[in-house]
Image 1 (spheres, one colour):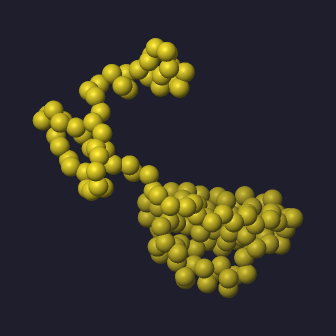
Image 2 (cartoon, rainbow, N blue to C red; image 1 turned 180 degrees about the vertical axis):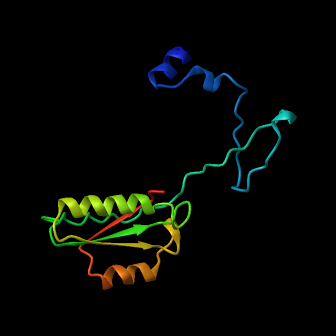
Length: 139
């Protein structure tokens, strides 16, 4: 079979293999040698994929039957500064208050941003007995 037809059937472009030939390396595993393309030698490429197993999956929490008389806690991740999302959270609190009588809302700013687990914010959520939490950037 012609190589172009085979590549087309696999969904690959013939341009991928039109360059210089690949050089296989044999022998014991070792750190790749890095060479410059200008030298005309082979180019080593490292695989950026993360090896290992996927994170454990947990089911989503069941939805609330209603938002009436519930406490909703909003976590501001402080993206672009702690005050960047104030307009968004203020508008969301007004919208919820108009549509759901008796709803209570609270907004907290996490000290660790979106990459950490802030124990203080988790304590605030627990102390407020939040029925639901909205976590977002909104900056």
